[in-house]
Length: 396
Ligand code: APR
Ligand code: PHB
Image 1 (cartoon, rainbow, N blue to C red):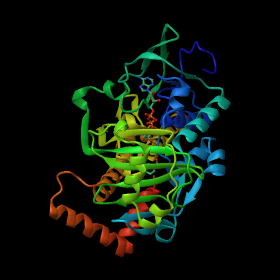
Image 2 (cartoon, rainbow, N blue to C red):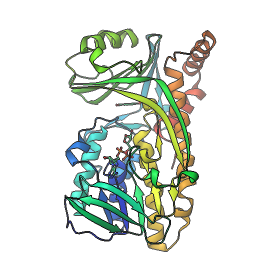
Image 3 (tube, rainbow, N blue to C red):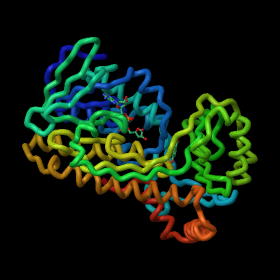
Image 4 (tube, rainbow, N blue to C red):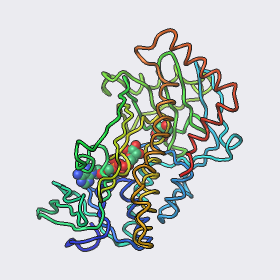
């Protein structure tokens, strides 16, 4: 914990010290708005989470603005395209030629570490390992948060509350049930992912569609690779030895990649379920939801972190507009503005998941539709451009 522990009042209280909460904290602090971040876990725990790492240009810009972009600019990779593979044959989507844009590959764990260091440098507080967090009077002019910290009950008064506490946090549940609408699609499979201290098999990501299921080849740096396989939800990590994982990956990726694949002992292995989820509205009174607290995307479109950054973009602008110009237009329109971009990213993530995975209930006709869609994508610059502009990130 940095800064004094006896904090009674702030302008914006941020619940959640993940990427959304930290990024919002930095942008507001740099704009002269006081913030306090409270986080349920220790910093080590937050930084131990293995998460994706493809950043849209908008997210990259916000990280630089937050004073947390220096290492990303030094160690991140600019990717001007990606490979799609069908039945062991690949084709490239050239983002740069089709849209003029690109993405940056830089691990979310590293990015979160950079944001914590920027927060430390600001001297503003992050209270870790808080418990029993409860939001009070969010629909009044003087909201406050009650929580237990270091064995003592605390009260934090504020003007606004940013719920950046992820899918399992308390913020979304603080919106009266009769006002909250939820939209969800749970996919009938998971992603088995490994992290392996081996050189990446390709210079850009490979998204592979195969009759045995989807596969993804990604990376963290020249000595650290990240691979995923679509597996049945019933599977457990114990069922998948490294050997079984590598053999199955080789079966699903383009032959040339399979031949040059460097294998090794995995240093992390886990299965993640796939879900599309959106909660509306993203604001109730003086409580705002950001990131996973309001929406979840399947990872196929690499949108999770970028959507959190998008929410933070709109909310930081809205709050700075309030404090600087006493203009509440951004606050009034935050939910609809953020949701408009959320739904487009949800559509793209659902589209990529439907396009590249095998569904247990798929009919022969469905399979032909999938095949025709992939063939159309391979042969049409217009189709590739649509995919590319969504993948690199639609404008804020
Ligand atoms: N009180 C305080 N902190 C809480 C509480 C609570 N009651 N509940 C959860 N938290 C903390 C979690 O411990 C976590 O560190 O809120 C943080 C939420 O962080 P994330 O789950 O990483 O969510 P977000 O910051 O919105 O980032 C979204 O994370 O899951 C990925 O794919 C997702 O990339 C996306 C990104
Ligand atoms: C990852 O690097 O972990 C990753 C990349 C792209 C995705 C999902 C995950 O779509």
